[in-house]
Length: 61
Image (spheres, rainbow, N blue to C red):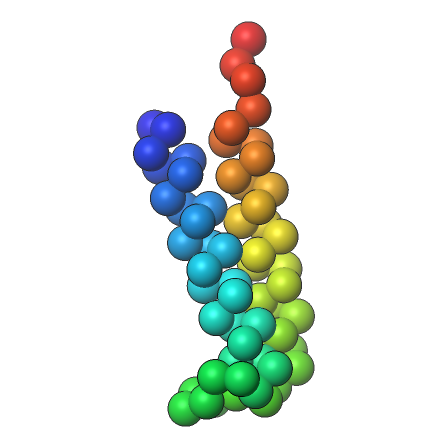
């Protein structure tokens, strides 16, 4: 279970970073390139991935 709680948030963070870069126009070749909504969706995805990672790492009682 600990592996799942690490891999899924890490994937969300990586995907979010790619979406940020595509939305900013730094990665080309996609319908998302240069579209600001994908920049903001990427930021939200990175933040959700970070929150899920921290939530999964919290100490259990």
